[in-house]
Image (cartoon, rainbow, N blue to C red; front, side, top):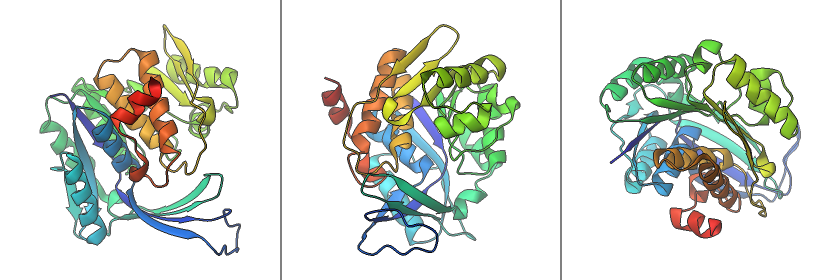
Length: 305
């Protein structure tokens, strides 16, 4: 069985859904409270597990508390390999406070907790124990040093690395040149390239900088409701997003990335891989929550026709 490794964060999401997002100093009454498992790494790992047939190995760090135990229990129920979901004896599990308005837009604050203590050494030990892995997916909710050293270690092992550079942070060209694929949204692409991405032409300019100047093998810039733009040496492709009524956009990018790594592990042609990922993300925004919003493979296939 093929293996997908996801390296990243695990949080508990505390969500309040209300008519609008509060401004500074403002209190909004009448909201609905939900508590769900989340964290970009965990969301993407769960999406890959739910949508594909490969074995998903999750490398993460949680606290020795009820939130961490609930998270690892959920990973096990989903069938994920949790050998490298490590418990931290000093820091609590990560927490995200999320506000969602009636249009599905959100505002998020994250207290990383144990996520901030996942070390490159711990990741290296896990990678050495998984010699059959072909794809690694990372994000930026763990220490940047861990991400950078993990990317280099994977490249040296011949493992294809997909980086979702979220939340937006500056990255060195040394790291970018080791990536098989990068998947920024408009904000993240602007931070990495200096190009304000507002349309297809500006997305193309940003993608060319990432590929031609910074050495990323393949670039996908996600454009929200407009879809996703792919660029490499031989192909430019815009895949439109399916039109849906958004309820909660919290984990749309995570579902996209989890679905994308599944498609790559199954060697789908790139147009099909992007369509699969866009459809999975579109279905996710029609539901509340992060991991609870991830569709099944049957649902995505049915929507694709």
